[in-house]
Amino acid sequence: MDERYLSQIAVKEIFPDGQRKIESARIVVIGMGGTGTVIAETLVRMGIGKVVIVDDDTVELTNLARQALYEEKDVGKKKVDVAAGALRSINSGVEIIPIPERLTSQNARSILSLGDVIMDATDNYDARGIMNRVCFELRKPWVFCAVEGTFGYVKAIIPGETSCLSCFGYPEFGSGVACTVQGVIAPAVRAVSSLAVSTALRLLIGGRDDGDLVYIDVWKNVMDSIPIPRNPECRVCGRK
Image 1 (tube, rainbow, N blue to C red):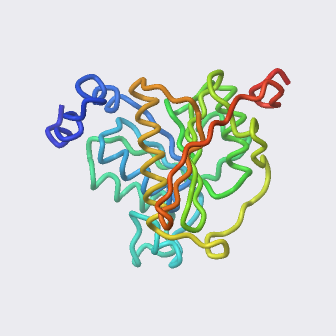
Image 2 (image 1 turned 90 degrees about the horizontal axis):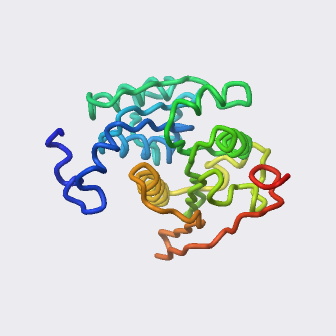
């Protein structure tokens, strides 16, 4: 094992076999905005074997206040291209696969099948609705991640074991609200992204997750866990 990982290997939840699982894992990150760039950077620094990054957008000046990996000189460039270059310079031992596309119903199966765990780093209901349905069909665990203002949510969704987004009525369609309208601060993005990565690592290493919705507000210093039971009548993961 690379000596760069000595500090995380020393953590009892990871040592010794956890690092081997990390280095052989494949993770798909959907969206390379605020949460996506922080998630991807953290995964790459930890030595995930393969990281697939998916986004069809370009870097804008308003992104730079909260989105890691991008600099002023990158404005106007494809996000996945800039992010891929930055990630490879951080850890050349990790395989980075950039996909300059928006997740759609047409490409979802081919993209999501590339990962052992899928990371939601999107900003719209359409993409999350697609992930929720297709990950259930593929039996792929995924991590829901959302940030607004000073707070955010993280939830593990394991097909056949935990509740899904539809179980508690999360919208399946819609474009969402732009960050420049609803507002968001970088500390909230970093905190929620860190929780999302920790959740993904537990899923990879074999730790248990009951699928609670974890809420954190970095302004009020509040963190809570909200149980979300499975809905047997859910139209995605239930009898219907």
